[in-house]
Length: 424
Image (cartoon, rainbow, N blue to C red):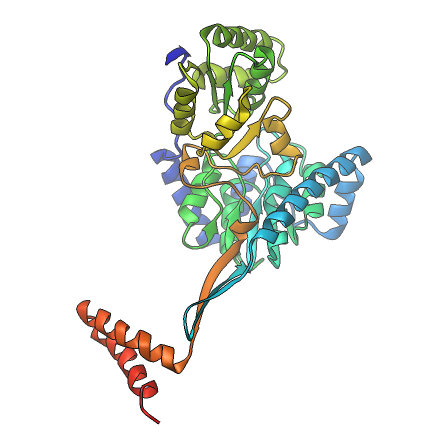
């Protein structure tokens, strides 16, 4: 393997200073409730409305300010997300089986009661994130969804975000951001019942708040700075590959941006293209920082080595610009979402195609996928037995319990053997 450009160490959301700050904020927010929310909102967002929750009139007014094309396009994107979530839900069926005579085992998929959706809006008002947590939860059958989104500093709430949240199906909309938003949804603070799951992407403070609130409620996953990796062979277009790398680099100075190619000539052509495109990129201030700090170009000696590099990196987004797409598709396993062929790109998944953009980062793709309808369902089991089966299982259970020295457990089996094993 040749390294044409090697970025620094990958970022993991385990900064002690961030953890300490978030811990202190959460304690303050739990103790002082909405007063603390108002204090932090004024400090960080210069936002102190009479109420953080929008009423129906405010929602209608926000939507009325939008170009009709924005509304139509949002409907198009959300329809794709909804159709995919519905198709996913259709695969999740109840189960009932009889492994032995008289024993019935089963499982059911039950939606959680309430979800708190966070729609980020710091550097960019990412209103497309609304459908990614709200629609799968709705399709799963969640009865109550509260959404929080930060204001745009100096402007108030962003109309396109309010429209997206409302159209996706949130029951309540709060304009508050960051750690206070996560605390509001997790604690309730007298304005709502606490949610069962917190969902949505955000900055390192939001991610840390989710980490610390896990246990009090569930979370979708811990998503840190976004990532893109591209595997490209000699058939790929260096200009298009460079374009896609920079498409993610504009997110944040801490983005992970990586290319694995199969030839040094191609890798150097991509490097030239990236530098060329950065000169005219409207968001080059952020993208150039990300590329300079975290950009990587590796030259693999073979397809096998390219796959091994990608599997170790376990990227959030993985694009394939290769001729033999099937070869890679069959062998790659560690990624948040896979984009096969140059016809698709990460922005499609982020905004409109229908798959979810809340995905694992920092190598979490080794053990989890992204948000989907199943994140909002609890798979719970049940069992039913005949008296005869209870005797059969009870005798084995009692013996096993005694080996473990759990005598009270054994007695619960013994009494059933005695009760149901009596001769008529």
